[in-house]
Figure 1 (cartoon, rainbow over the protein chains, first blue to last red):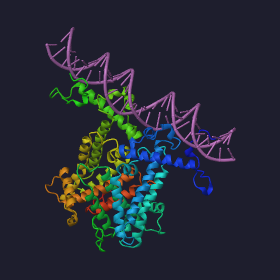
Figure 2: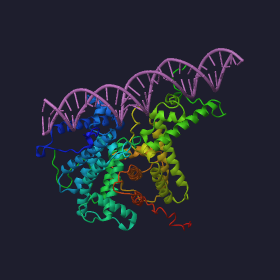
Figure 3: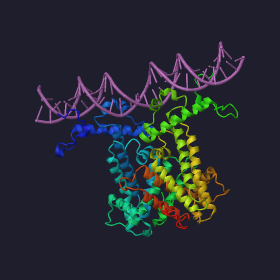
Length: 268
Length: 268
DNA sequence: CGCATTTGCTAACGGTGTTCACCAAAGCAT
DNA sequence: ATGCTTTGGTGAACACCGTTAGCAAATGCG
């Protein structure tokens, strides 16, 4: 008898062999999904601090302690939905990537990066909890699901960059400026990212890091509204950064509207 | 009789003409300073959500409602200390800037940017509330003190950039790529920053924006620990970004240790 | 059916922001 | 010195919050 051991710490046990999940497991998954869905809504409506177990329970017609059968605490719930959101943004970027011809690497990159910004500005609260400071998390909370989901999200861009790299479209920068310390860190980066190429040059990783930092910076600045007192619309600056970023990558920039400047675009 | 109108909404009134602040005003300022100081310590020790009026009052030997004589609420207190922190980081950067020869513009810029990162990584909680998402603020709270302090902070860099610009050290980028929308936003930027030069070219503002975005990005990424699962030390990447940033600015990069590569450095 | 597991509840503890009524002390003017 | 006004602070109260412990009902399995 395992009295006192909460359900969320036991194995799924997934019984029934090939008959799929049992009825119990299905309804359990359903209520967990409802919890996460409501939490998500509260997040976008009232910010991170506006997500509370009691409010969720109230809305579900339950009481707060009941939720502890599904989630070990509020912080863990935040971790859960944060991981979900990483999956979501990764899907959004992938979908945008897949919506353009697979051979047009330039357009794929352009589209993917714009999709990232687009998702960010239309999901500000989510972006803030994912890419902002780990305020409520990090201490005493297991964040491995988040970094795992974050890793998968990163892979979306890595593969694209990998493809660009294999096309040898741009000259790698001067590697003599890379200090041994930087090389060590970049190597660690490449290793944990799991690139397809066996031995990727550190210069390439440096370029990738630099691009990611710039993209992250401009999007954060827009979502966190740190230039609002000085700029009304941040898209022009984003496009400008995009342009200058891609220039160093040998990728031909195209403005947002024009889908095809090389092939004739279908008029719609 | 103004019953019910809290003190913090009345004018300072600053009586006594030239005799300075009255005794009452002095002790009032002292307790307000104590409130902010304790709040600040709680912030760095327990994060933004760890700042509570009750805890502060407890530590001061008072009760929470008493604090409402000094501060209209917890959010406003956060705004207050955030503004203070902007002043602090601006002072830190200014001090670093002033610690090197005034004629050596290159070294001044290098030193200032490094000072910014240095302050950020040694004041993570403060940086997060200043430059992270405006989670607890923004809604229903008057943030003008923060943006005002932020503006003064920005000026620290603007003046340096202005000096660099007047030296005409680097060729401005091709302005033909600047769309009208971008130009409008950049103009607004320049206007609210109050540059000394009467008519600064938009190309220069674009360069400044780009540099600020990159600096912001790399420092945020380090402080928010979003690459921790892949890089142990972020300084090499920061230096690398610094190097590539300054290369476009015509500023000679020098590694952190070496103070003088042009003049003979004093061996210490 | 019987029994073990799962699920949800109530009660409770300690914490939070905030408002209100009230009171005492300080300051000021006559 | 006396009286009045302003100021600083308290205690009680309301409405929230996360979390734990113990218990009762529902559920599913043999």
